[in-house]
Length: 367
Image 1 (cartoon, one colour):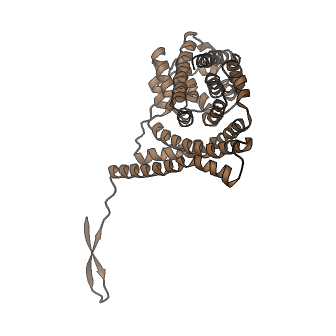
Image 2 (image 1 turned 45 degrees about the vertical axis):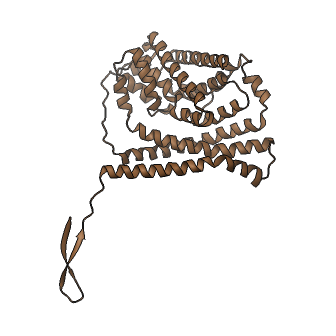
Image 3 (image 1 turned 180 degrees about the vertical axis):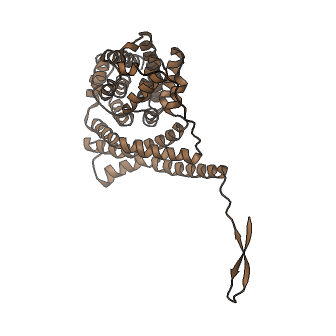
């Protein structure tokens, strides 16, 4: 819209001046602009990502001057290549998942699961566990919220198992580092363990092994907060997720890559195959027992998995190790003790542990 305003000129008389009011950008134009910026950003990300491996070889063997095939050279090349690769993948994944998660809330998840029959509820809970924000520190409030919403115990455990173990970050990192077959195997077996374990726990009717103060909470209807978010808000959620998650896990990622680099450079293939290969029947239970006391997130353990597989460790043994670290970590058991009696925690560990052992033995047998 145009408006005529008087303006003083040099001769002291007024003359008209035309001004133009700015029309605010429409939501559609803002979305198109965001898409174009996103595509350009991804193109730049991909161009840099493709140069990481050549740069790692140039840095290690040309710039630093280490000998190809040496232990130190292999270890440093692995570290220089995997550190930016995993961090770039992690940042991209977390950003996208952060936007996707803006469509979900923990309140809405409880609403979906409340009143569901156990079999269908176990499947839905495991699938929702993949995309719902979750970490070990939120296990207690989530558990209490599910109890208040009237979600069956078995369905609750399917969610609590799937959320950390079938982690979307782990799945995409496995795809980026080891290919779609390993990622698909991990996804399917993790979901099956979560669904079946939750169903089995539900069959036992162990509600009386929940702490008394939790049982005393009245079941009520969960309140769903229906947020109206624009695409700018959802992009903001993605950026917030990157600052929050990557800011917390980067040290674990680098530590995991460091362990993987040491394995890659210094551990002989014959040694790793002898203790984690298919022929060592005890390797699967040993991997589970070693993994439980450890504490790591999915992003930190994937580089170790990559190095173990590269040195001849059997896929089933490595998957069992990874699942036990993520799904049965000792810190999570300590946190869950606030709401579960020791007997129920023991049942939880036993049922999930059996599922992980079965997965390890199965894939060592068929692959």
